[in-house]
Length: 181
Ligand code: IMP
Ligand code: MG
Image 1 (spheres, rainbow, N blue to C red):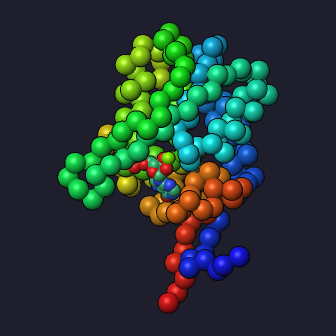
Image 2 (image 1 turned 180 degrees about the vertical axis):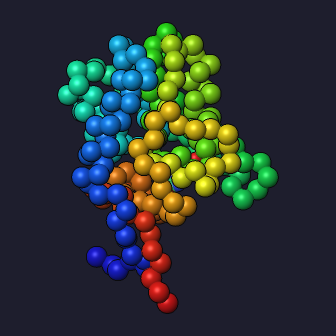
């Protein structure tokens, strides 16, 4: 394997993730009806979190329907920043409780756009759940209903999150530390 030009410094361990996931399930049960629940995950970063979360929901006797949405931001570095839908859900969410799941809440553009698209489709409710929150980076006025961990303003990888398409497979969350020159 080629050496990385940076170090991976663990900031959230597998055990911490496991423990907080239990708390997130409690948060979901306290926040919304779970009968006929639809869980919508934003690809790609949320897939590991989603996989653990839905199996834990099952252990709490909560059945779910899962669907995926892919959004992409455009106009980075320009004045006209926006978010477009690359892949939409196929599920009819009218009248149903929806849990919208993402890996990390950063500027807030992605989650805000996804929630507003879903709310136009007359669901019973839309609640948002992110594994990580980087509040210092927020541009849009949005907060998630459920947050796993608040992290500092630094790039993080693992447990689904990537840097240059790498490190999604790590079973923990790490921050990137540049190698000293
Ligand atoms: P937002 O629209 O700026 O909130 O962007 C959220 C998306 O950017 C997330 O779904 C991630 O895919 C990606 N992202 C933001 N910060 C990080 C990070 O530190 N590591 C990996 N991906 C990130
Ligand atoms: Mg993402």
